[in-house]
Image 1 (cartoon, rainbow, N blue to C red):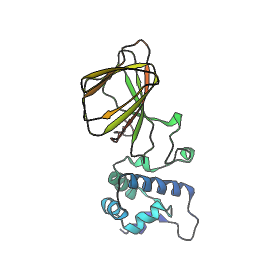
Image 2: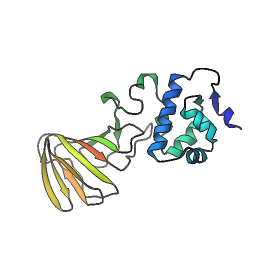
Image 3: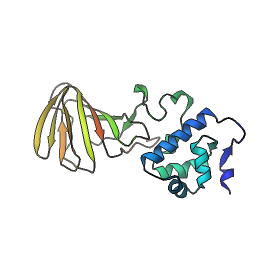
Image 4: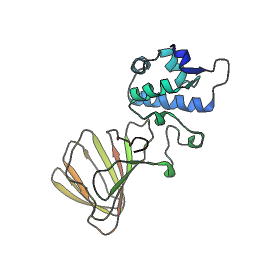
Length: 204
């Protein structure tokens, strides 16, 4: 089946606003991953011309293209679609009421994703309840944090820091690090990580 059968051709008509937003999102995700047009097209199994039309909003995505394209970009298919009521979120903004929760293994910790789908950096709002915290762990990347509320005990490379509202930190994620809220009030931290966050799949 040809690419022309996989997308809805809008030649001779003004681009649809929803298609334009989807195209912008696909392009932002591709650029965030440093993928040339030809490489993404090859991964998704479509022609360069078809992908170019999608990114320019000249065609509408169909299911048989959406799934391989999302897989090639390492996102859920839903991340490619922008509903009319999400137009303001689009590529560069995340409204407070539309944050997506991130999976957390440690007790007493909640994480909401602050960064939009195409962002290279992962921004999170991390809320640590009294007594909540993590064991020491490490991973690739770099991170930065700003304590917005409360107090947190942060340990980096065996050095312990007590950080209060207004304090900030930054370190290589390869260093063993842990944090814990030893106070009776909850702590909120704006946390930025250079490693992409794993978002929950729809329905999970």
